[in-house]
Image (cartoon, rainbow, N blue to C red; front, side, top):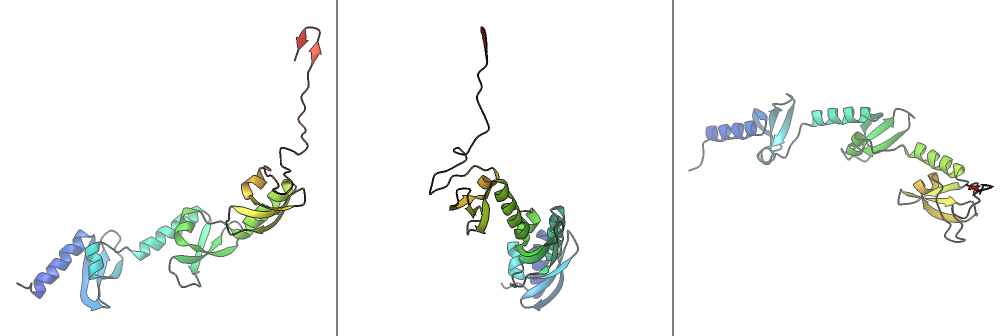
Length: 193
């Protein structure tokens, strides 16, 4: 036997309550009804199937959580990205004031870096290691550097920073550079050090 409209409404309200929602309006707009989140009070149109599956979230709270997470890492969300993807936003780093497009999850987690400042750090690390930073590579862990021997090599940025690299062409490395560590033996009659 087919359920009546009233039974169907009661069933929808029961399913909504199980999922932490309150059915506000039974009016269908694009196959979605208006629901209120019991946890926060925000309202959103959600398709009936998504309510049954639990495939929904409060976008207002989600954006608020993203903003809080970004602020913890010194990032300010400026607005929507030009690419039209709602998961990407235009952000600004509070320390340096540089801007870029970033994935919201990455910005919230603090894993987004300022590419302009990062490149200047690569250049500074290269100078400290007596090298010259030339360019980035597709693999962001590596860069193209001119080593002290004059050859161009692809080297991990961390190895340049710690000055532990080796030229692929001439084999010169941190192990072959002049060292200022000397071994001294001291003798005084029967004492030896």
